[in-house]
Image 1 (cartoon, rainbow, N blue to C red):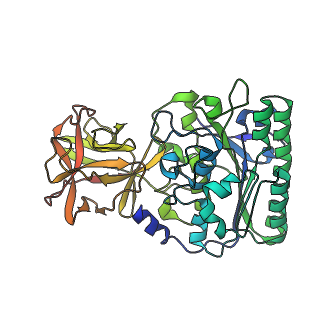
Image 2: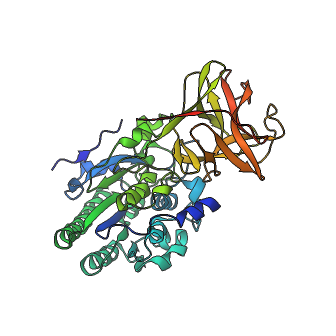
Image 3: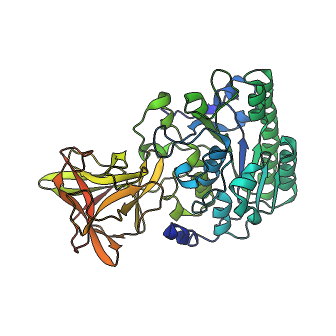
Length: 458
């Protein structure tokens, strides 16, 4: 069979986690297979008949080069992103040796458990660090787990669960390709490790298909890797090169490209790699499939690859006689009161507008591959054109966002017990990163607010 390749050209947050749906369909199940250090291009070059049974798409690892979410193309950051749906600016795993992951951004184990505390969860990880260092707080949620012992041990434990238990979610990590790459680089040993991994994948797929046939279950299978490899030698990884950033997501389901109209990554480096899905898409895809946590999808950095994506909107204000779109400024950390992961909000009267997701009392924008929540800046009166009772509006890409009161015409937020309305600043081109057609957005705590209109993106 020819491989099918898609054509790709926090407190409030934690409270929200307890409010998600408490159950999901009993027959919906998920198997997530992680195969460490597999170079995407080698799957197509080698005989891999079991990968041929899946739809496979190129994807990217490592965040966005030069931005707040850039992370090493190493196993620790990679698996942490795969299992949380967020980048290093949120999960906090910067290297293989740091941990545990930031509990404000829960793993897929905890997200499923919070939706259904009777769910049977498993994690069989040849590289045990995933379980023991990055997500130790989630291990008590599992029905069974393992660390180390080789890929055949992880495989056999998973097969036993598929044959004899009632799993709802299984994560299995296989490590041989990464080990072969580190020891031998490109060559016979590395190629054989991928062929062996394909054989193990086939055994897993056979058991899943048997359960679907006999037990009338519906399984989502996702297969991925944490990073690519150095293009010259194949020995190492960790840097921001096209080869090291190139990964894949494979599935027994057809994968959607609907995310392309909502992702906002103007950076076209690495031969358009950023136009493909990211590792952050895996957790949203699982949640969407299980029908849980719809309120969480705005918090996460990726988009689901199954089913429809929740409608997004654009917001406009009339300033003078101009129609001005609500946007985020490309320069993060400006003015100086903002952090590196924060972008000032603005109204652009040049005809542009950024895509927004309005979820309940929160407003999000996807900025350089991260979900960023609309907030007010704690320091009032900055920049200097803003009055002492006004706070600059910003998008924070490391937090969930501030709660808003949102109507069809106005947005308010409560700041220090004051009702503060979202407005545009009368003076254009301030701070200096703004053009002469742009007005900084602000929250005015004197009680006034400017009128806006929302337009649904079809």
